[in-house]
Length: 143
Image (tube, rainbow, N blue to C red; front, side, top):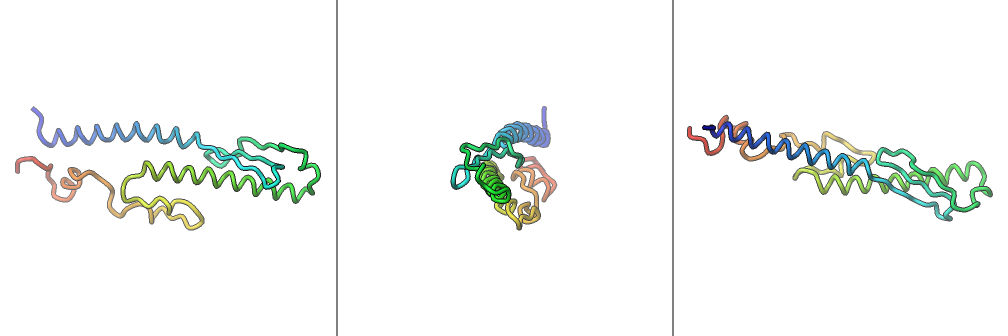
């Protein structure tokens, strides 16, 4: 016969394994994100992967042949940055859809990102765990 404590521990372990499975799927989806951008005059196209790496660099026309080296470098850089912004936006959207309630994920991105602002001062936990942490007892257990 199991005690309410055993049942609470079993529930916590079940929740943990479910969250671990979700995290694995989430990580797979994050790693598959790509973003593609084309320059204004369609002279350059860049595809960027989930980690900011260039996956593909294309020159769809011969227009790049007429560009000065610095101009071509600037077009590639601007196009790369536009593709990377697409990746970041997709990552933000995926994270927002899968984040625990109460987390402001907008603080994770951009030049002013601050993980300290994102994480709550108290860890997020179920009501049962909070009751145990705060009061040292399992909810519903006979005292």
